[in-house]
Image 1 (cartoon, one colour):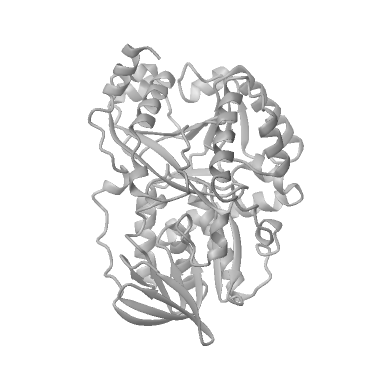
Image 2 (cartoon, one colour):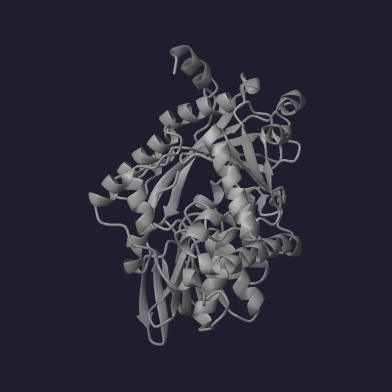
Length: 472
């Protein structure tokens, strides 16, 4: 990268604020007061991100008389739920390829359940008036290399042969550039119905409002400190009080689980994103993007990008940073070297937008597990349920996970609980230094594959055979 190019690209970051764009929205609600004293309830939900909010909301919709309390350690939506790209996908398995590789016998059921879940999210948006810029625009996976275009074509032929390509269209070079004009695009797979775009923080805030309207008691700035059996139920201690409850649903994701044995199944991987200033009409016309789909490229180290409601471009991904020891710390949320890299990639993709400025640059932790998609379980004789490991594709899948947790707490055998995906867990991560070494070697190998026409080395082939992975 030439110094002149680097200085030109980094200049675009000179006014970028190191905070998530979504969380600065003027519609941000005031937090609810912290819990002080003792509470009792039928169901205690721990975690005020999508996982916990959908669990509380669905619990009240299933049984309006159920007494539900939700605890959030900071403010609702402040972590992953307010920092993501706003891609609300139907897939429950981190994409069809991952699901087909891991659960081929269940894939049609998983795809059907995922499509139904996205429809139910859309229905909930309408039913509760969730003002979150929901747009069912779909998504295009784009190829930026010749070998990727060939692989996309082969993949489309494979899923079409298995009856899994409903609503999916292969786009050649002219067709994909007619949708979005980038000189780097060589082909695309357009999933027209399987993804919606939304404002992630607004979704969380509006879910909180819907929960409050249904009678859920929400306490913010109230971390759950420990979990223990208490008679026939459970007790959770907080800094200024305690909750006694019949059942607990844990939606804490990347933060250390109150069920200690669950902690080895996830590691934090830090992801980063940029947001541009709003595009002018001329700038928007220069790139097309009339249908406002989400976009993602086909490399191992991939980018995801989309338009906001006010026609900014969110551009994220590529670097996936695992901190040694797997700690979640605020200092990891800001990484200027990654922002500079992302800015360079942005203007390579859209050279016609040179001169555009970035207004926000931020990062956040993804709860990554070794199979990329959520896992589930119970503890304390079925009185506690948990879901975690969404690996960056949880905007939609967390609602499905909420229903799984509620099914498990009810002791019900349902179509969801009978899934192998629900009944079996991924492999846990090893302790340090093995986790860091393995992840570092995998990242190096993925980057090497991207620069060698997708050819996977012996390490990646071994990881594939073991069903282990690591994704950007």
